[in-house]
Length: 391
Image 1 (spheres, rainbow, N blue to C red):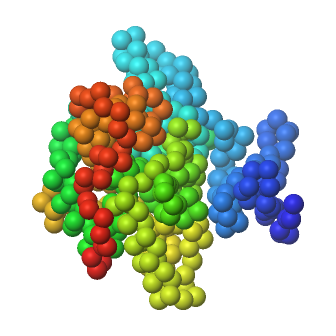
Image 2: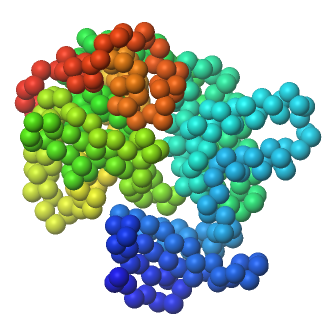
Image 3: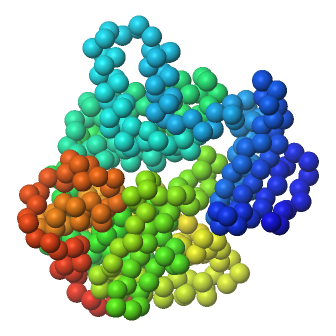
């Protein structure tokens, strides 16, 4: 394997054929036990690995315990309950804390390494709870416990900052509010067709993708020709602590999935290919689509989540709908599928849920005994036609 020569202490970057990914390693000396600390990071590109190595060196300089990089949120939560909470609360309160942390919080972020958690992960967890119809008080308690667990991780030098500190709990449930009718969904798609990110909205709504999955879709995982066009969800776009947007593996094993795509999605993807070709020609040497992403800025860089949120908010207002967060497109997709009589198992597979139990908790429409997939339900939303001029 080829290695990149660097100054002593800067580490090395090399391509690992067995994992088909770039890897980086840096020697940070010895820990308190005398063992050498040589953490390894992986990435899709050399630049991504370079950024991750810089994060490691920065964390090491600030005193983070790099030997604890594999610690998950569940492990830190257990340690907090046992060692830090102590007897400061009664048995009933402790039991309530354990139930919440080992239930909904564990499902959302429990298996994630604490050092890999981002603000967006905590926000997405709360949005999912909001869509379940859970109370604002319940979500505030969830956020409070998450903050306390991450504060404990900071005191243990596992992480350098608490990513939940600046998160605000949602105001209240939205399960009924954001369940779109076919008429509302069709209107949103019609409005979206006039926006630069309209194709992203079409793909997200019709396939129920998570925001990071849609933003992280690459052309190598898109097949628009042949009898059965498909897309494969193989990665998600996330932000690193230093602000870089990088591709990471899907949220769960079941999140990696291949979906047959209906004609309107094929049309949107073909239109997106043409739009991107025009962008690339206009950008010239400034073009920098490192990951070969389907949805990018005018110069090929990954989409900033805040910009996507603002664009969707504008589209929703024009369509006469309440404010919509990108994650709500996923909920709307599931609601439409369920209302159309698509079996719960098919909805769960389409969304990439780990089990039908999770799907049943979120999407409560009665399930008709009709064996039809997402293709039939979503084809009713939009006729196949070229997209209007975007602005």
